[in-house]
Length: 266
Image 1 (spheres, rainbow, N blue to C red):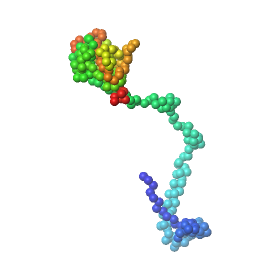
Image 2 (cartoon, rainbow, N blue to C red):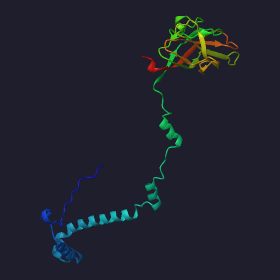
Image 3 (cartoon, rainbow, N blue to C red):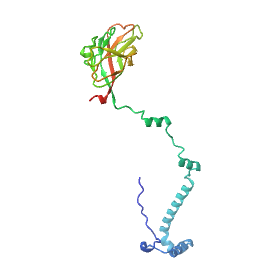
Image 4 (cartoon, rainbow, N blue to C red):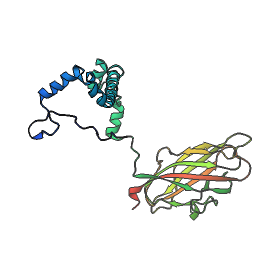
């Protein structure tokens, strides 16, 4: 709450010159008033005291309140020490940032690059038999296949980018005799103008029980492998069980995550 406007006005003042008004008195008159007050004449004169008593009482209450405020300020409000004052002047108590933090700010190394966007593609498979490599369906979902030219299995890159990860859950157990088995995901691509499919990156995961997620991060294959692709290239991802095989066909809920360069989308 803000401080209210001042209400009190002068009982008298000692203005001079152009600022002088009806309440202005001289130093001599003020001294005379003070002398009479110090001598208690406002109390000694019974007639004057009787007339002024209520007002004098109110003024005394104000004087007592002011005196209490002075006492509180002088005794209860503790001043700061010399060392505290010096610390404020030198600002030695501040919490600064570390050199590495300052360097990171300067280099802007902690930024999240807005040029790139992450694109998850859902490519679920129904009753899949992954004893042979099955290409996940990027288009209609649930209809996987072994053909690398099947339109369902091909994703045409709308911009340059990289493949990042794959995430798999099955409502069926993917264990073989109670144990997990290797499940390989392979990223392959066709360059523009070529009919050849080239494996570029892979991740080997271990199968788990029903309704449990399997997360895999792709890594470039040795020698000529890569995670990258260019705008217009054909992208395929396959899944294959490479060890002991869980019995029966399984449903696979699959999400593949790509990173695309937005500046290359136009």
